Amino acid sequence: MGKGSGYGKVILFGEHFVVHGVPGIVSAIDSSTDAIVTKAKSGLTIKDERKTAKGYSEEKRLQQIESIERILNAMQLDPKTPLDIWIGGSLPGFSGLGASAASSVAIARAIGEELGLKLSNERINQLAYEAEIAYAGNPSGIDNTAATYGGLMWFKKNPVGGPDFVERLNVQGQIEIVICSTGKVANTKAMVEGVAERKKADSIKYGALFEQAESIAVAGRKALEAGDLKEVGKFMNKSHQILQEIGVSSVELDHLVDVARKQGAIGAKLTGGGGGGCMVALTPSESLQSRVADAFKAEGFEILTTKIGAIIR
Ligand code: PMV
Image (cartoon, rainbow, N blue to C red; front, side, top):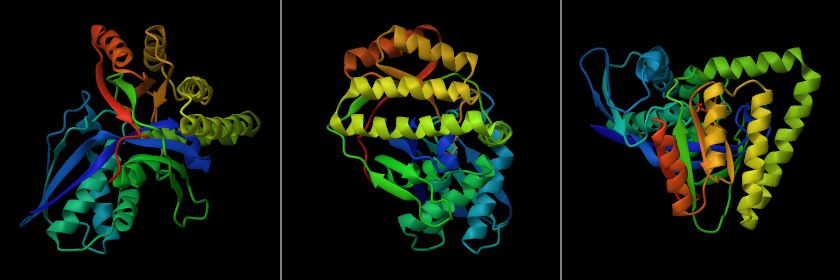
């Protein structure tokens, strides 16, 4: 029996833009997916006991099977190697929290342990990237990197396919956030493809938006490192605006962002692929965090209250 786990994540700046080489900022969160893998006699059995948004497991099932075959293939093993896989842990299967990357890291680690392979974090990260292709089509690598290593990071995809450019960010203490799920399962692959198509069709508009995304990431980083959370919040709000402009927000996400801001969140934006999935609100202090969380709960939404800048593996 082999075991493994991988962190969930929240993207503060740069989702979608990172796929095209713009830098972004991601933080792992203190919820993870765990996997247990046992060699089997025949076939692949997956027992998925994660708490999920309605329909998540069904929607992701084929991508999940492909992702496991991709991991095995990248390990130079038969992609049909018979395995029993259990998946669980504290990270809910909500779109936007890097649940697919967290599960891929967990499964890659557990397969490695079960088969007695000594896999470095670097190798696990590569395997999880391979797995992410099944879920995202053309992933940036930001999710698997956060899921593998944890912590708060500056991430820039390597345009020619070598190691990505990753830097740990130092922030003072921990900052409270609220993550709220729209309850809608999103198809990351379709969202990523949609942005690529629109970018191709309107290169002038998108070129300007991509430049803005880069400036926001740079300014957001400076504000985070200086501990100026009001500024961080301001740039998160700007980030939501450009995500709306590239067509990845939704009525539900915009509503949740409004609710958070009305309750005093100093910044709020969608996080991850959008089109459903989750939003994140910056709520530094436990009282503000509770107020925003209670407002979401009162409307029947599911939330996660956590902190960023907290975890390093
Ligand atoms: O929705 P999630 O948790 O899969 O996040 C996707 C993040 C994207 O930037 C949209 C895609 C990527 O690979 O970076």
